[in-house]
Image (cartoon, rainbow, N blue to C red):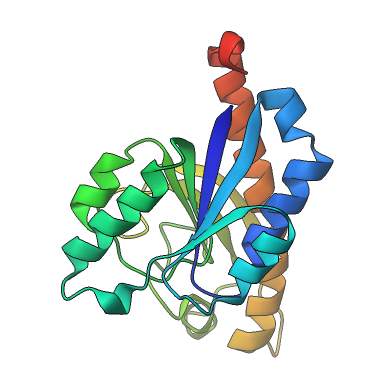
Length: 201
């Protein structure tokens, strides 16, 4: 079984979209894949309760309990490794990861970012796109590397910037595309893996 571990920090709307897609797309039957766990750095994250109601294992690794980032990342990696993940999915996980953590999950760690990378890495992407006069914004699913928001791109979707858009209105439309694109990108990854290793599917 290919285990997928999802990392969240809040309500987990992207996580919920992935869980729904895993069920409706019959990932277990088609790819031998399942959502094995949802892990958060925020013990009160609403997404943990949502995952639990779907019968998914949940873990909280509170970053505030660690004096330095390396210690938190080591504890987080240990919690993930319990589930022997084929893929680790960052879905609104609001922590910058250390190079050691990224190296540990090299090739198995993906993220979603609310811009058409390489444009607007980092924060405040929607306002920056509006301020720059962009006519198109969007969302990118990419492999995670040690350089923030700069890994190889797996999938992108464009979202028009409309006259009168605010950061909030643009963010709402981009989020709708995130919910569509992230499950599709993961399913595509699973299809490629199944083709490469049919005996493990």
